[in-house]
Amino acid sequence: MAELQYKCPCCGGALEFNSGVQKMKCPFCDTEFEMEALKSLDEALSNVEPDDYTWDTTAGSEWNDAEADGIRSYVCKSCGGEVIGDSNTAATECPYCGNPIVMMDQFKGVLKPDYVIPFKLDKNAAKKKFEEHLKGKKLLPKAFTQGNHIEEIKGIYVPYWLFDADASAHIQYEADKIKEWEDADHRYKRTDTYSVLRSGLIAFDNVPVDGSSKMADDLMESLEPYSMRDAVPFQTAYLAGYVADKYDVDDKASVARANERVKNSTEAAFRKTVTGYDTVDQIKSNIRLSNGTAKYALYPVWILNTTWNGQKFVFAMNGQTGKFVGNLPMDKSLFSSYLFKTAGIAAVVAFVIQLLFGLM
Image (cartoon, rainbow, N blue to C red):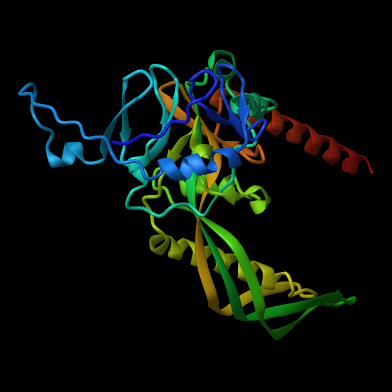
């Protein structure tokens, strides 16, 4: 397998993309290089031929098809250590010497990304956000906060399909205006029902759909939005020092989710225009798309993993904006105590109100 590493011409160390200075930087001698300076080198190395390793051995036995499916092995050119990854790992770091590796063979047979949003925040920012995420959580077990240690933090470029389209919508609503009044003898209620129609056009740019089956869609969508103002034309140099997945869900397979997001957003936008009624129900919706196109981009995500009481917790941070998401455990005893105290306070308040009204 061919691998791509950017070597520092000053000391020979492996260069990596530094999110702080937005340049390639050598972690050994701190020399910085502009991304444009590496563009020609990147183009030349993109055509590197794969290595050919032929071994003659009778040791062990062969994997069967089910076992071997998805396993990939690479040899680090800096230290010779073997790196094991799955079929979608496109960039990682050597576990022995720490040098960043871009696995060029993984890009063969798949589309080259159109854009990449480089990391703006580093690993320390992700750790800080995690600590802030724990603060103020009254039902969080103390043992989780005191004894919890992050087991793994990875900066991952997640593949995304970005869909552009114009949507033509025709939506019908049933809306009610309700008026109530009373006299000395009766209470009255009048309901006027209206048929409300809305038609119009709405344009969508860069509707994102996660292209990796390994990433939970709800987790990735919780990190949105990303801003394309920081997007740049793709260069493999941006992957150095991070993990990168190539897509295993292509654009055609992602269309259904894109349609769903466009539909929900269109209906929500048109619903906001129906005002002045007491109740509104959507009756019919017809949405047609035109000028639909798709782009392929890589988005920066920090993934943090930790285990507590035998349960794995996954947290994620938007590597561009710092938005942090993730579920936390709940101390059931604290929850029960909280409910008891709340119920007790409510009972006292009810007693006082009853007493006051009894005295009046």
